[in-house]
Image (cartoon, rainbow over all chains, first blue to last red; front, top):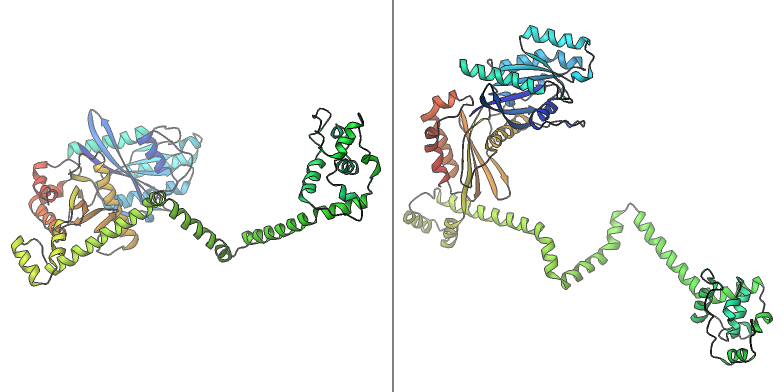
Length: 170
Length: 343
């Protein structure tokens, strides 16, 4: 079976663990518990008729990308860069994470998760900011809510498809 | 009968008591010789009228000359004493004092003792409290141990048993390492080993014990160094459903220790110990081995792991370098891992 390492990165409290829990266990907790080090879980997905095992590394968030332990990111086939749509700084830190991930692995496949979309009005300027950064970096962007579950499955499916596509062209 | 006529009046009560002959001495000055316990008990009991009312059964009259005399008079509701011995409040108070003096002294003494204990309990000085309770607790424990040794042993076993087991395991490991160090290598053929042991003055019993020490490899993980993805896994004790996660976690632990405690250095995490189980880790340039074992490994086991990792890299370097999560052929990897399971 094909397995791929996928890392979740982003500032602290943007909802990395919540997305991870929603996707793996389909549950959400209101209480915030900071991740120490890293949390690992496996998720077997069926993507376009093919099985793919994602080994998910939910990493500890910090103030910005400098807090990420680089060795956790090594060998990752893909990564999800998460921001909290209600916190502008976490969106503006996206380019730093993207640069860090590509520095460690130039072929890494990325997806941007603009999380906590349920807390924002449809016309909020942070949405536009996130779209602008995603377009500039040419990276797929998904607006998600770990709380309601909105688009969470789609987020991982999008990355999984990219990983399999890359496998075909490998 | 006379009991039913009682009113809530101490004087009346006392008069009634007098009529019952028992405390006659109390009201016959100067022969006031109160404070017999019996009187106190009667007073205390009789003063509580709460449960008494007209529905109470009549008190059986005392068998005394007075009682018999009263009975013979027909139906006198109140004995003569009832009207003839009224006491003033001051006299009553004096009577109370005389009757209850011993009790009051005892209560005062107890209150002082309680206050002293309360002060000790409230005190922040834990030393003082320990000093107060130490002799009592020690005595209780000693008595409990004497009375039921089995129960005590059973209660303590979970705590002491683990410590003893750990200490014995460590002592055995130390012995084994001592013997191995003296022998340098214990992988020589047995006759040669025995000869060398004799020459180096190693006790034959120690050497025999060393040879008998239990040892088993439970799991072997071959982990991709960079990604932490599991390349291959072998188990001597059955299948392990989370082998890929365990492999990843071992890799994460190694990274965490390195980045947190020794960033920028070349050191590696070589061993994790949990109770009797140990995880020995040996790193190669692309893949690392993590071996879960129990017992005391034979001398030179870690060198053997290093050799195997090195041989594996030499033989399968290209496959290992190309590894990106797609499974490698078991026939390529197994010849290097299986021998380790059979040590």
